Image (cartoon, rainbow, N blue to C red):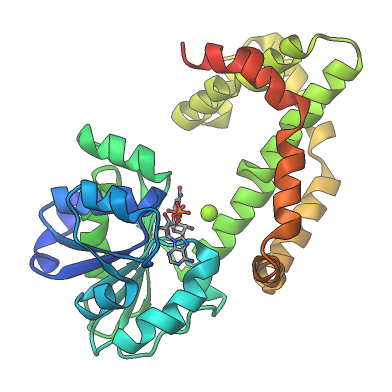
Length: 327
Ligand code: NAD
Ligand code: MG
C-alpha cells in the first residue's frame, strides 16, 4: 500500500481557495486552526444559535451561516456530527454546489450509506484523521501529525486525489503518512473497528475482567489496576513492536498464560458475532437503527449512557485511576 507523505502533496493547490469548515467541535476546531497555520483561507459555517460561535470568533475566525459559508467557498468540509449531515446537506449545502466545488468528509459514513447524495458536477473526497481533534492539534503544534486515510468518491475536476492530499497536508496528516482507501472500506472498517474492537468490544472486555475479580472478592481498586489501568502500556508495546513483539517483552509466565487462555475468551463465538455485526453494518441496518434513534431524540441512547456511567468501574477510576493516570 502506498503511503503518501509531505513531499507527495502540494499545498499550492489550495492556496487562495476558500475552505468552509462546517462545525467547530473536535475536528472542526483542530482542522480550522491547522489549515490556517498552513497558510490557507478558512471560514467557519455554524448554525445561528451555535454555542461554538463565540469560541471560533475568539480564535479570530470569520463565522458565517452554514449556507453563506458554502456559497462563498470552493471547498466544503463536513465536520458536523454524522447524524446531522443529511439535513444540513439538504437544507444548507446542496443549493450552493456550483460546478467544480469540492466536498470533504472526515468519515465516509454519510456518503457511503447515501444519507448525503452529492451531484456529479463536484469532487467528493475523504480526509479521515486517525485520532481526535485535540490530539491532532497538539501534534501539529509540535511539528508532528497523526496518520489518516484519503479517498475519492467523485473526481469531477481530475484533481480530487491531489486535493485530498493537499488538505491532508494542511491539517498535518502527511507529516506522519496517509493511505488511500475507498469510501466503502473506510465506512465499514471504521464502524466495525469502533463497535467490535476498539471501543465497544474493548470496554466490555475490561468490564468483564473487572466484574469477575470483584465478584470473587478482590478489592475493586486491585481489579481496576490489573485489568484496566495498565492497558496503555500493552497497547504502546503493540503499536511499537507488533503483537509478537509485545509477547516477547512481557514475562514468559504472562506469555504462556496468554496463549493458553486468550483463545478461551475470544473464540469462534466472538468471531461469529463479529461477522454478524459486519454484515448488519454492510447491509445498512446499523445506519438505519442509528438514524431512527436520532429521529427519536436519542432517547434510549441517552438512557444507556446514564447506565454506563453508573457502572462501578467509573467510580474506581475516580477513586484511584484518575490520579495514577496523570502521573
Ligand atoms: P463534534 O460532535 O465534536 O462537533 C460537531 C460540531 O458541529 C459542533 O461543535 C457544532 O459546531 C456543530 N453542530 C452540532 N450539531 C449541529 C447541527 N444540528 N447542525 C449544524 N451544526 C451542528 O463532531 P466531531 O467529533 O468533530 O465529528 C465531525 C466529523 O469528523 C464526523 O464525521 C466524525 O465521524 C469525524 N471524525 C471525528 C473524529 C473525532 O475524533 N472526533 C475522528 C475522525 C473523524
Ligand atoms: Mg468513527
